[in-house]
Length: 262
Image (cartoon, rainbow, N blue to C red; front, side, top):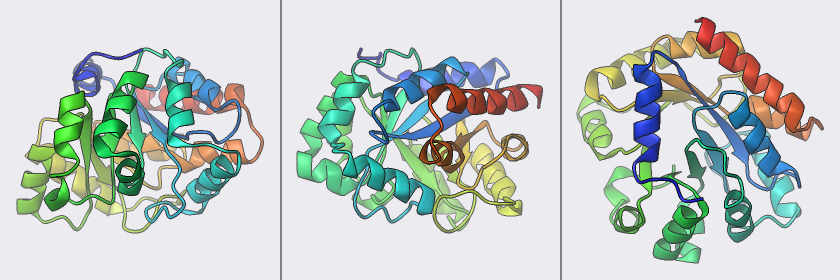
């Protein structure tokens, strides 16, 4: 079911303004035949927005867990069309954002990709390999379809570029906690707090931090300086290890409870 325009930003602002910390699980589309039940379970467990990964054969930003999840999905026959078809029947009541690489949208056709994603119920998109200076091909198609384009900022983004980047962002700003690829980490480090603080000083958009958040304790630590967290590898590892929607939902609920307790 198609969500209203601006759903990502309005929903996350409302959650933030109500005093909640945003929880954004990442789920690889097509990781198994029950994958859409993972989405439903995460939503029922208290997710505020869900990132849905559309697998790509050369995922330069993804670490070993998400790469393995993508490989499993591709081996199982997942395609952008099949993933969007599944999404169209999800009806979870929270914003859904696709995370993929530009080659996927380019091969489908950016106008068609944006339109079909929006019609399927997707409200936003993250294209991590499209820099700020090269949005011209994507942004008009996204705007015409009503897709919000989420921008990423890293610890190395200088202040002047950070201001330009956040002014171009829609939905929320995705702060990258650390340099490197996605994946679970034993510790996050001080760069996450520093970047979150810089982002909060630069924009009023919801600021959500990702990369390396693996445990409820880490989620609380990171969210203390931002509006919320993205968690991907920790959940997808469970699926790769054979856990189903109910147990993954419990892990999301544990993360939700920790964030609510502060």
